[in-house]
Length: 191
Ligand SMILES: Cc1cc2nc3c(=O)[nH]c(=O)nc-3n(C[C@H](O)[C@H](O)[C@H](O)COP(=O)(O)O)c2cc1C
Image (cartoon, rainbow, N blue to C red):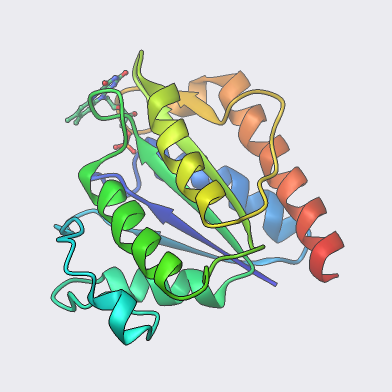
């Protein structure tokens, strides 16, 4: 069993990565393989509405100039997907938005490639706007027909500078509980 986590932050190894890793550590304790992919330094384009994915139906985006098809392939191979984004102006980053649009269309065009995989998301935030970011990712995961475990609160960690989320004890506990629930669900689906 494998879970792939994708960090939409422009900062490698920042607060979002920390939150994702807390979830992944819980999964590892249950023997689940994990991989963290970070989008920092990339400039992923949004969907250009070419609709080629609906013609080719090859589970790929026609735009091969960036790493989007690698992300799509990694998600396809995994049993579970964990998305993470910091809050940027009360929503996800543009790289995470690009993934939602392009993987969303490729998914739809190919009979829902992520259907019935386990899917969840986490958000880092300094102060406000985390819920719209959380909703953007969760709306995508639901549309892809994925099965979503919850936690003891919404999956949000508070902090601005890298590392600050570690001071948010409730946020860290929320991530641990999410990891436990994700592992519980994966084992019942695939164990
Ligand atoms: C362009 C930009 C926009 C941001 N917008 C918000 C915002 O709307 N609300 C907020 O609370 N924090 C905002 N932040 C702060 C980040 O969400 C916060 O620092 C977060 O911990 C960053 O996570 P990271 O270390 O994974 O990049 C913004 C940061 C940047 C760079």
